[in-house]
Image (cartoon, rainbow, N blue to C red; front, side):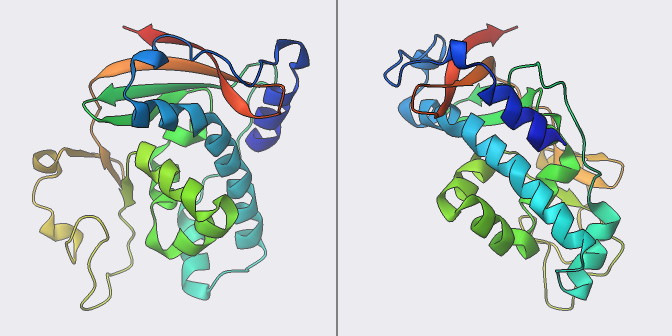
Length: 218
């Protein structure tokens, strides 16, 4: 499972643990304080997200959700994936203005449009809040670009698609005019332009997941 490999991967390198009071690696020290804080904590939050995904998959498989939500998840939830446990956790961020987004890295699930749509799905808000804790959930959503699943089920009368303000997909005349694009049946944000930074994470001597190195990407 990806959560197992990621957790083992970050814990495995005791010889590379860093002191608690480390100097932020360049180019992170040039980021505005809110963006730096978001990157500093992102590794830990992505690991929590990976663990929560496993819980979500297990509960859905055991029928622990309502019939409607369970059916929805059976249509959309991706299968569990794995990664090379010898590879350190790395995340790629794109900073633009006063925002920063997670746009790449070797935690591949974190940039999959379907996974992002499930993270932002209102019906799973209480689940994510409980599994991640509310503060971590909100901080994670702030760096994960949103996405929407074009589910075949009709939107209930009087309801709107969260984040889009439309009551039917046919009301979205042109996705491109909203800065969005379709990837099959997933509506997602178009490629985000900005300063790209690759960040590698390890655990420090207090067992906290922190950046150990960062480099600007072309």
